[in-house]
Length: 208
Image (cartoon, rainbow, N blue to C red; front, side, top):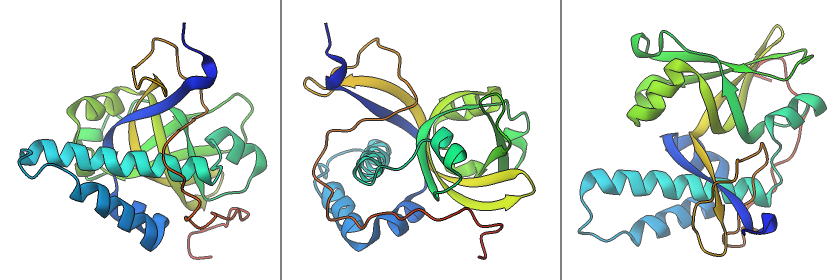
């Protein structure tokens, strides 16, 4: 039987915003990504290389979130501070996903929440067919997102990563059948070199 303390959340990504991730990670984080990409076998087919690169960005961004204790969406809403969240998010169906260049995906929040939350994303960046289909239908996803603006009672975020969550045994790297929760745990390299993400009260707009 798998020890709960050996479990970690891993993400199979279908949406990865490389530029925004590099901006958040900074120079050292970007150098780490480039180093990992440089280790890819040069004989790897191009389609496979793109998948591997998305996984590299996702794993390093998850490690960054862990090292900097980035909040879940629920924690961010309760505490009303922070510009990033990393958690499992349930979304409503986005029925125009295939018809628009920029989708506005509504999140289903806990009862009594005073805010609405939407994810704005460019649909062509969702490269995985399965993810696109599930965003159209609505479902539960692992999401890392950055605050963009507040419009009335709606908080708008730009996703950095969206994918399918699963629990993995950190000792064996084998997937488990234990259901994930809205927390995340990663056991990768030590990322103390990354600058601490500081918490600020949510501004009324992204210009402040």
